Length: 250
Image (cartoon, rainbow, N blue to C red):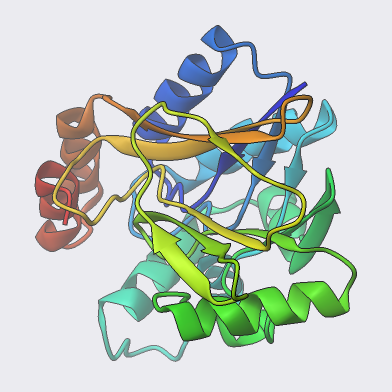
């Protein structure tokens, strides 16, 4: 079985559909969504509906910070663009979509792996795993739950941390489409990247695929109609900077 790992869709229907199509062509049988389905993008309802349908067919989804923000936005006067996005997103969701997002768990276990949006170390604090020390805290928390493997989102770039012979976690930058064997004797923390809002200067969508039988993880970049997604943001009235992020990948 092949499992697609998708995170940080951020209400970008164009990117989500491109990644789903890419995964299906590769023989993916199951999908896991690692949080932040909404926020920043122009089509939160369409994205949530698509993920709800996949979950009804056996997919797994967990909660991200943007789900939490959209369901309980700040006061009437947003202090920053994130709060503005959360307020707008909340107005776009119907009751069924809100109920689905509100019921999502913070973590899930699947195929001997802990799935979490941010860090397994206090998942509700939304800590970014950006350095080896943070990856170690994340892995230690997963190990306390009985697994040596964690797949995360939240960080909008792709990276794989692995335990060296000394036990120290080291970062590895994956190559598009090249599978990495996940040796069982090592600890692993994988950051699968962002489907809907990459921030590494490359506008292509990001996701990853776990080959369960071979125990190999491949990271992918997928071209999509990012200009169409940016145009949808402009039509929605959301801030111009949200559209520019999709155009330049930052």
